[in-house]
Length: 332
Image (cartoon, helix red, strand yellow):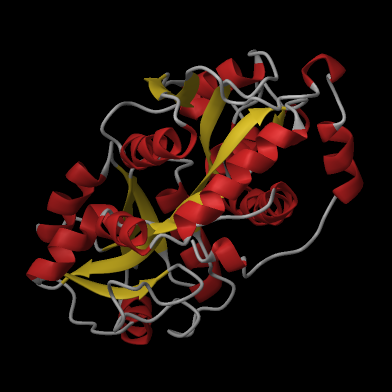
């Protein structure tokens, strides 16, 4: 996945720049009646994925809150850039909201040579929305380790090291594996798949040793006992897995990694609109029934001010730039 409703890595950066962004586009400077008709919510990934499912839940809540339909449109492609580019090209009036993820803010620009937009200049994030952690997992049948320190020692003792599965180069699970190698000194070979649906059988058969992948994809395997969770990558222990330590608690420092998301609107959108959306998300994050609904889906609700979201994204950008550099991936 927040909470980072109390954002643990908070730092106020670029406040002046944020203020300047809100002062742009005077033609749309009021927004006092927003929303007075339907709002588009663009999900830049296919229907049925975690981003789609979770933002559709938020769209329901926004409709209840404001009395207007928030209509979800799936616009996948180009690592999510196609959909968010639609937001950048829309009028700055708050009637087109993007459902952006960590990739749009902090990863894609280091992997894609020609970006269609500049997230720092072209977008405002009214609020963080949720986060999904990754989980370090092994096959219970093929790996004897019952803790992360045991696994690291076991992996280092193997002549050929280990293999780490992921949904593909440049994804947060792949980059989490890169970070794991760097932080622990374990010798590992990356094995890319098209998704967890392929990675999991490879791990259960013993063809792949390890993964630091999305918790939502692995929770059923962990609960069944087929896989063993060694650590989560969130800043705190995950509420539905209280006995699984964080990476820090397991001895791997500087390893807080989550797949987080935020609403985004085009720069120049009236501050009134931005603040209403931010305030709504704060209400949602405090709703215990909604919190449970998100946790059941493997995510945790977040909220923030626009300035906190900007500062959080800036800090994440520094970390992911370092990890992409370590990975050896080049912009294409």
